[in-house]
Image (cartoon, rainbow over all chains, first blue to last red; front, side, top):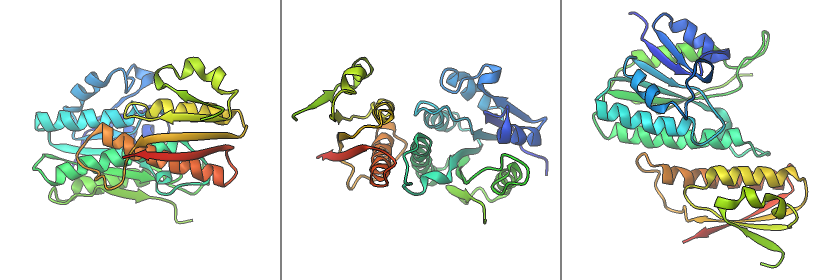
Length: 179
Length: 104
């Protein structure tokens, strides 16, 4: 089975880049570094998304108007276009519980959790051609020797879910270190 | 409220210098004020002084998560944010005390 084609936002560095590289040459990264701000260039991103099997909503700009609003727009766009495919939202384990300190990052990821649940609920109650999963990631491996979630873990999860029956919904998957 | 100032979200940032001299702040949240709310909390917290932040927001109780809707999302997120702010105060991580009023 050949790899699906993938559009990822924010795939120009770090884990996003590793995901982009894995799915190359059938992948495209749209990020600020190549002129695609997720807030300013939403229409263009939506248009390009129709060319790909999978959309990975990865880029996080620290504002409600970033990942969450892009998800709402993408959901409605794919719904109206009758698009088949899979949307992966990259969320965070940090929004699971109320932590001892206030983190804007966790609040905005919580907002993404809510948006994902809303969209999945509508998908489950209708016959849309696409599915959606929120990948809630624990600490990512940033340097060699660290423990945590790697790009390989994320990629294998995406590939696994992509191959599952389209009749089954996986609204949320949590990936976190065992250590 | 004696010694407090009511913030109109649209002119929040124009008044931030004035507000930093106060001890109590009242914020009346609505559906389009999440970003401003987070930013105003962060601004006040940076001062590292004792503050009382009284936040009023639409009632969340019994609200279902529902279909894709920004307004409902903002309500749920505000609730999470406020719980997180309360936790930060309880754990001594922040000097901003929160009182949350839900409008019925």
